[in-house]
Length: 253
Image 1: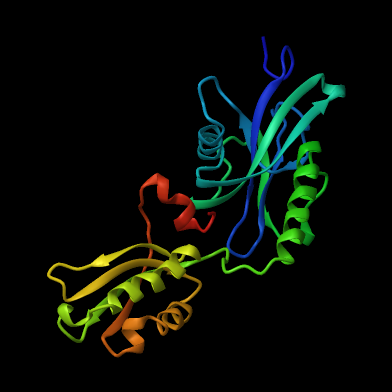
Image 2: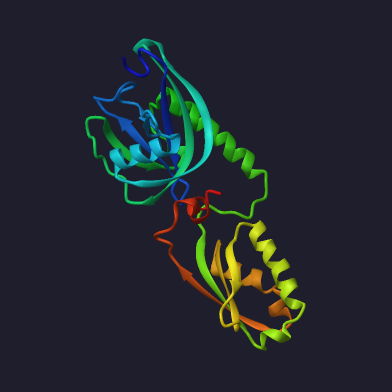
């Protein structure tokens, strides 16, 4: 019994986007299950007991040697191929590479790979990838009409706040400072914050489009406005992190 032939198979796909907005596509090789010679957004079959996200991560590691962050669901497509006698149901997710450079590991299944601008997508596309591309373009058009504080690539910072006065003299400004920080949390710019021990200042884990944007944001901190503290911003690259932080670190949240 073969999935997709003897019974409806479940596949999963990835629209992988780089920081320049290019899309990763692969050309199906001579040993591919179907649609040989077509370009596609890569993916694979879901194995018994696997979640969709875990299946997608496994396939990208096995076929292209990359680790990906799986973001939001783009669409779910009926992948029906009458000429080849196959029927699949395939959800596709918007993803990003977080480790590695794509390379062809299974040359019989994949003939070529590449990153392509949205107006330079190669042909022919597989049936499901044509629909994925149409839905992705529709999503971009919808988002372009909505102002957003998020960008595709965020820079990460440790923010050090150094008090200029003893903590006992901060008074009600502590409450105002924490109310101000909530604005940063609502933007998804701040991950965590709190006072240092001993209480000579505070520390914050943050990300923002740039150091200048983050510094500009903290110009409105009540500590800054009242001359009670100085702020220092140290940029870093989060090369390792807990899986539950993936969306925040990669900007997919």
